[in-house]
Length: 192
Image (cartoon, rainbow, N blue to C red):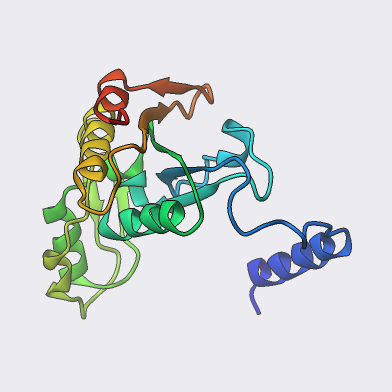
């Protein structure tokens, strides 16, 4: 077992020793959901004032409105009663550091972890790679506000998303912890 594996199991043992949340209801108590990035610097529980059972938090690379993220949001609403959704991207996001072509090229070289320096991304492994990466839209980001707006519009335009659900758009500042509204996204996400 790795050091990390052991640390996780020890932390869980400590958590279980004082666990008192077994009676929480499945639907989120505050009836909202957040779609945000998987970046380890973001703690939605802290920046949105959440406790266990308060809200659904859906995370992926970039906090993007992928088909799977929208699937989760629709389930959150239809089966578990959320009434508002937040799309929250963040500054200094890794999804801004590459393009679909860069990712596809790196995967074609090898499946090992790549490295980045001042000159760009470099493959650190030796084949075999895979050309399957060229068939995925990696939903990279050029501009945070634009990507938030794009995602809010994509969610609102989805045929399974009810028009009366508001979707708010924000960018989390990793240097200050502040949520910065993207007014155009919140306007596009208004309930009708």
